[in-house]
Amino acid sequence: MVKISLKGKCQDIQVTADNGQPARCMIQVELDHSIPLAFHLYEIKLLVPTEFATLLEVGDPVTLTLEQDVN
Image 1 (cartoon, rainbow, N blue to C red):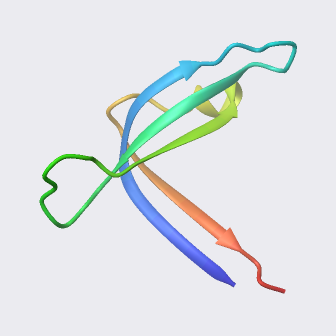
Image 2 (cartoon, rainbow, N blue to C red):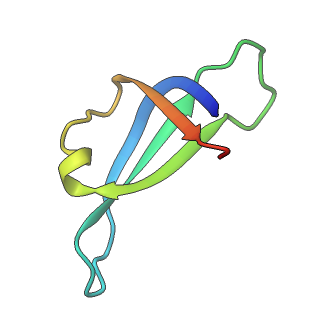
């Protein structure tokens, strides 16, 4: 099993157009980094159901965990 944990800060939450699909939100997370960056920030954008997005607030810390079972 592979498990990656990432920490960062919620930068933006936007409702996406539903286009006949259930409403979703785009969450943008700027990841913490230990080296100074000259230009691009490390970030992740996720599409999640609105129910999950309502639990988050812009500016608050976020931890993301990615897991993959290699079996």
